[in-house]
Image 1 (cartoon, protein in one colour):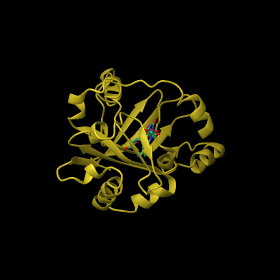
Image 2: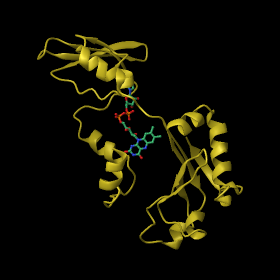
Image 3: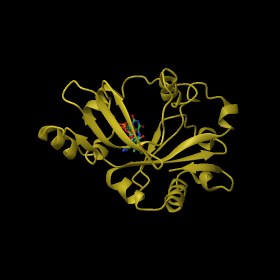
Image 4: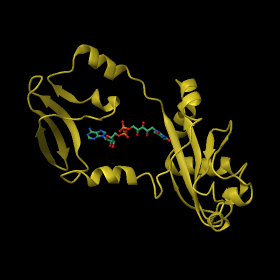
Length: 206
Ligand SMILES: Cc1cc2nc3c(=O)[nH]c(=O)nc-3n(C[C@H](O)[C@H](O)[C@H](O)COP(=O)(O)OP(=O)(O)OC[C@H]3O[C@@H](n4cnc5c(N)ncnc54)[C@H](O)[C@@H]3O)c2cc1C
């Protein structure tokens, strides 16, 4: 699958949602007839026969609530779904598929830099740096890749400082947030020393 991904996907151009990726779910949410209900933990799904009504039973604060309908689209990750009470139960084959699907681990740590030193100093506009450090790969914002506008370069930019998968991600996730963030800044500073300058990192997320 990885070879397929490299051969078929990465050779094509990319599109950008100008203004941020969260505009996509926000646009879906706007079209809904009733507002989204957040903070509801579903713990049981019920279906009455193959065509009968379905229900999701969930915890909302201290309350247990129930939502019924003609059909239900369930997008819970399988690692959650395997622990959800279902009546009637899924078929043995479905239960096995749900239980045995493997999810890989991944960690991203982002830093909001005061200015885009990688553009002004290193002439890097978009793309990534792949390393053998525990912090894996670093990716640069691509929104100034075409125009290479100096005014934008001198302003802030979000650096995907560290992107890891598998064992590397599991090692990083064993650290607490402050330790992981410091590790990332220390490691990335070995090839981007500007990141360690005082006041350079405005904010981080991991
Ligand atoms: C660090 C990292 C980086 C990634 N980078 C990329 C990338 O660059 N590009 C890309 O395409 N993909 C990326 N992925 C993969 C992508 O994020 C996932 O494939 C995608 O988010 C899966 O979507 P989902 O809706 O199936 O699950 P999720 O996004 O995990 O959504 C599941 C939702 O269910 C909610 N939930 C859980 N339990 C319950 C419950 N009992 N009741 C109600 N709600 C519940 C959760 O709160 C969550 O909101 C990345 C993943 C990770 C972890």
